[in-house]
Image (cartoon, rainbow, N blue to C red):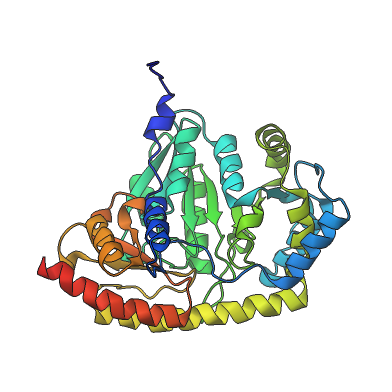
Length: 392
């Protein structure tokens, strides 16, 4: 049998463990079991109807060919107008790069900024693909352990303490995955200034903007016009499968980003770009706001319920749709706990090891991307599952 030797990067990039949880959940469902999904960060609402209609019209009109690598001019203008409306930021549409999902925006930034051996500082825990994309371009993540005392976010003091000579950038997320915590305007300004003092670039993942509860999310562009901003139509606008995101970049970076986009993926899907123009219509925004309110109700139910079960959630998340829970009181490894919960109670949750290394074996992530009725049933099942876990 022929022996194959793959590139080291393919071996070094860790699996996305939540996908194994999802695969097991699907297998149990195929056997007839009722599984409650709290593992996947995908809204349970379908794409808003005005966007669907716009996509159907685009298909019917034959809008299926290539577009410019930076995106349809009309969509770039609409995104720039969104920043003026939401954040009071006067943004030139020429700085908007439309991408095939937020992941492609991250790929572009990684390819643009990171030479082999260079590092980007980011919080641990954090979204796993951030560090994996860096490995893909032969760079690395400088993971900084964070906890409840900093709301699981980087601070200027942490940037000063952990900056290395080979660092080229600092990356933050607001709201963050898996913790749901937010950086306010002052905190963003502090991180931007700290990064600037070190001579680095500041990258902010704003993919969960729009999904905040009881507060407004500030964009980093309000305080740092030279920051790189990652965003997506997937979460607030409910367009996960349409694979459409965007990157806001300094004007000087756009020509190089365009060349990278031309070579890496040519362009974002034409039909999805046309459909996304409907995302900014009043009818669509009203639907998105109603869904945001529903997510807020779910958070307000699930957060105290999990705390009552003995799970520690020391910081109330202000955004996204996740709760990052400390399981150390319960004993054992959190990945084993997740396996126990799905096998005994058919509740699927994500182990902390997906999100980094800092105490990852003592945390799990719950996604409240399912109905309130399902969450109520899940809490009942979790009560039994945690009791049997501790009895083992």
